[in-house]
Image (cartoon, rainbow, N blue to C red; front, side, top):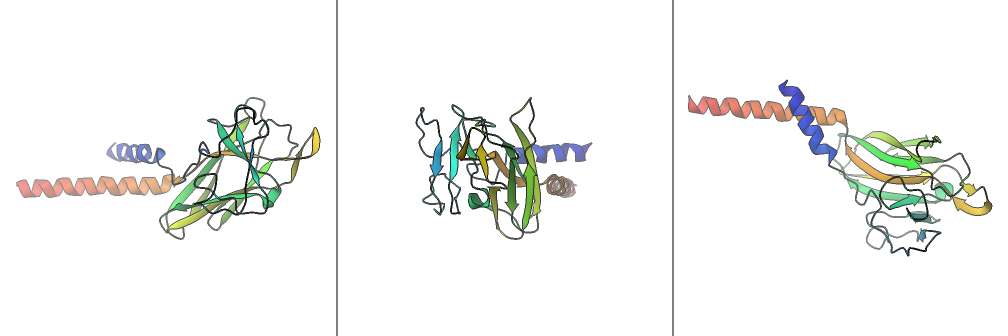
Length: 215
């Protein structure tokens, strides 16, 4: 029973932890309420000069910053629509501990802008990469996705780009793509459980040491 309590406490602590800065994309360039086309973010800017705090657009093509007033957004009021296939990449360096297992999770969906299927994103975390396709669902405009990885250094690069070059069904010249939102990086459940067990053993050890001193 004690080990279960210890593990659930660790889960509770790490459920609130996220190594990604501005993973919900709520911070970004000013967007006028009537900006129905979203905002194209400039490319090749570092973290200090990027208009999207925490993120860089390290590619030759822009990505689109969209809002919930004119597009479909998984959560909150802002998200990123990936354009131009692998030429439109957003990335961030997050703090990690070497040899620890982590989980990169995010929401994947469509912007509601008549973008032609299929929609898919390539997610990168360190030396791991995974192509994830969006599966249309009449009851939801987005789905949850994850990529597990083992950190090799104290900082790990996470990145996203579209797998395909998508255009709108009503305008072949207008680029569009999958929507990414709510990006999180946290210790995997196996790492949490090991940490929980270590914490419980430490607590028991301190308790026994205190009893020894009293006796």
